Image (cartoon, rainbow, N blue to C red):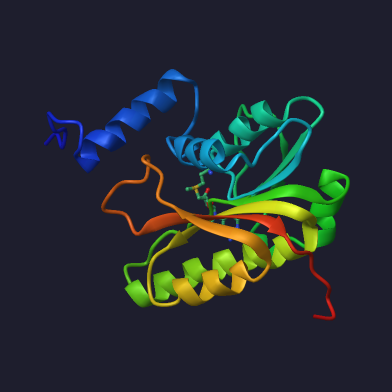
Length: 207
Ligand SMILES: C[S@@+](CC[C@H](N)C(=O)[O-])C[C@H]1O[C@@H](n2cnc3c(N)ncnc32)[C@H](O)[C@@H]1O
């Protein structure tokens, strides 16, 4: 049965609009509009930047970033699967098996921006799914602390739930600003939201 609604406000309608728009623009996923909205509002990704894209498959964020940074910029994607038909440098492995040195080598130095749109497949066990999702955000941030330039920025996908606020509070300490976004392309029923941090304060292993 079709879930389409006639009006413009329903979540099914919104989802459909972004899926169609992604297809029309040659993007592999509607998620691109989440990043596009955050980037438009926060002004994060610029020409010549080096960007790490964690959880990059099927590649719509990577493609968006590659267009934004241009030929003098770099984008390195990490996922369990390699995007097809997207130009980029990919590490095909779990983030838990990727070391900071490998990312630094792939970028050729420190990154200006670290993105994470990672999401685990759900098991149906709500508490366990939430903890696994928080663990992905923590791993993204553990890597970001070690590969991000001072002054750099992050965007992480987070799912609301018991441990989300504590996780965000810990991340916030590392940035001058940290803002929460629920882009239009996120289905209104979803617990998904994003945090964007700017002005990374730097990190030392001795901390
Ligand atoms: C919502 S998709 C990302 C969509 C992507 N940003 C795009 O626009 O095409 C989430 C991705 O997170 C990846 N992921 C989940 N757990 C991961 C892990 N441990 N290491 C790396 N990637 C992971 C999944 O394989 C999946 O491709």
